[in-house]
Length: 96
Image 1: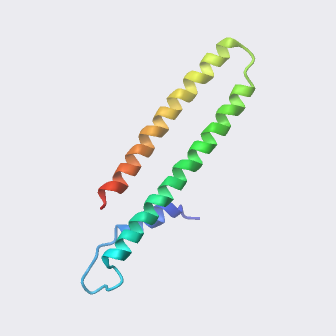
Image 2 (image 1 turned 180 degrees about the vertical axis):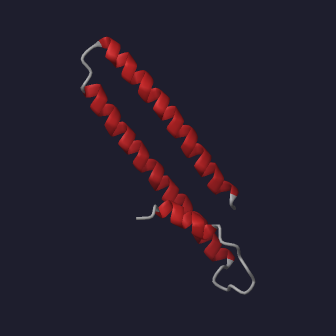
């Protein structure tokens, strides 16, 4: 099953030609909005999954040392996720 965000992004990347009446500025704007919404949905889903995993790990902690280890690991993972999602959304914004 193909990722809907990627499918929408690929549709938007198609070149516009004068012989294609369906690719009006309206349809290009619609494709842009749909790609942006799909990316936001993907980011939201990743954030929810991250929060769920983090809560599970916090609930399983048995010592203070383990607490610090979990916090450090998840902080690093969250920073990486934020960097990746920021880059992807910025790329969507440069298409306009």
